[in-house]
Length: 483
Ligand code: SF4
Ligand code: SF4
Image (tube, rainbow, N blue to C red; front, top):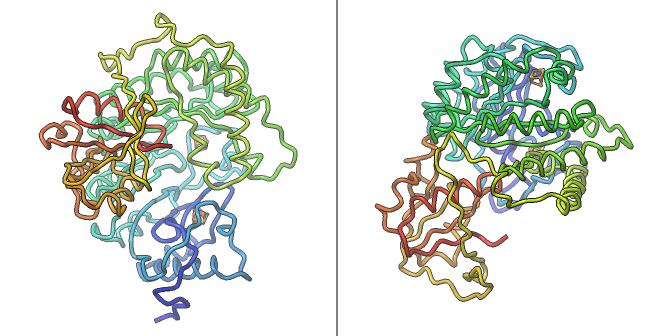
């Protein structure tokens, strides 16, 4: 048994990805990939093929890198990562499967100029049996919040795509599928329709066929639009969701592309639009690289979509801005550019708001009261605040996420008569978090809650409030966590 350098009561620096993450890449196995940050490899593809990887091997590597993170003299990228937190060593379970990044191949049917695989001419076939590595973990090892970023390369080109999807479905791991949508996949459509694929995410990055061809390397714009249209229909069934992404680069920041993309989204009606930047210049440490024109173009597209009722999500907020100070700086500059441009953009012109024809009904907009913790208070929309008593009250938490899990164990809430959680994802429904069950929105009224506490991630906020408004009984308290 290898030497364990910490005792259970030691408080150590750690991170959830070092504890339970797995990045299966063409370079081998590691804890995670965060773009600018790269923790060291556990082993190479050759070693995986030789069979060195066992569950015990992964556990020992996780311990080794947490030891390095806590050792002042060692070199490890994680030391500058904003995800690092402190924890009692004895509370860490190294045997779990949490966030999976699946990228054990890099072949693709496009050649995007911003893609590292294009830049390095690295189009590798499948490097090892990633499913065999994942199968080292039993269904009981899977964390309730486990998810896979199913990327690559292009997943729709995998011969055994359906085998992977079946594995994740039966292990009840949420799938975020990153596909370029050049090929239509019935398996992806079906997964979206039944919710076993939680998100399909496609970068379109252009509003014109000519920009798409120049940026993505193939003349496939109209084909991608057509396939996205089908995936949007699958997403409109209310289980999985389609997100169409725009990565701002030097070559797609012109007005033709902004207008073309915005009106394409109004026609396709994906469930979400995500905006971000090409961060390659930042990763490659191009000093003095100027994001100003991309920031201006981003703000323009964001406001054009907003004018027509589409609230785009700032995708980089969950990515680069969580790990890098430079990423946060770009985010701050963008938010002030949006503020600056919004003074000249007309909103709330009802004739300009394009209704979601796929859902039939317009979203129900509610603005719930807020609640604060420590001390526990209810802050009403008119600004008054009073103590919020949960004693003996039947309380539901929405959605099932790490933040609502924290609320469940907060001392101020211990007198509540907890019902459990609500989440729209069928893969999550029926699971338990600390003994409390995750239910569907449709089940809310039959559970007769007194209070619904909501702590929504920003990108789902409007959808979550809409779903609560449609399903909650009248007269109960609905409160959103104060920011
Ligand atoms: S780079 Fe950050 S998120 Fe990834 S393992 Fe290291 S500390 Fe965790
Ligand atoms: S679609 Fe994805 S994997 Fe393929 S070239 Fe573009 S960025 Fe790279």
